[in-house]
Image (cartoon, rainbow, N blue to C red):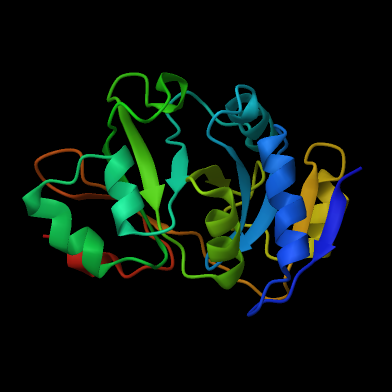
Length: 207
């Protein structure tokens, strides 16, 4: 059964955040709230996390896994951001966007898109996520918690607990969270491509 942590949405309790991060460091999988619904999260070094996330969401090999970063400086260690996209990414973070960019050597190979050698990155605007990342000290491997057959992410902590009680290790509940998934923008090519329209305004990346 998953541990259920009731966390304050604005001032997360350090003890609860510490428990969640300890689970991550021990190889566990957590479900946590973001500004774009719930997400699944694991430590970067967790060998089996990608497979667990894939099994829960029934993902194919074309799916881009995402690194949730604390800030723009941390993001820059894990993806290449050239001058042409620097301003657009900087102006859109933190916020409900996921950017697909070429990965640096800091990203484990198993997390890269098989053909493109790219990875998703994002900087959420949510106190609980910021607290988790501050305690963890590195990005978190993540994927929006959209169950098979659904188009929107899960948004209720108790529902997440009931649905995923035996496949995740911790569920963090901080009350209301965002209800739309992130807008996904592929910036790895010559022209930005909006892959998924979500909570973030896509117009700034459309020709």
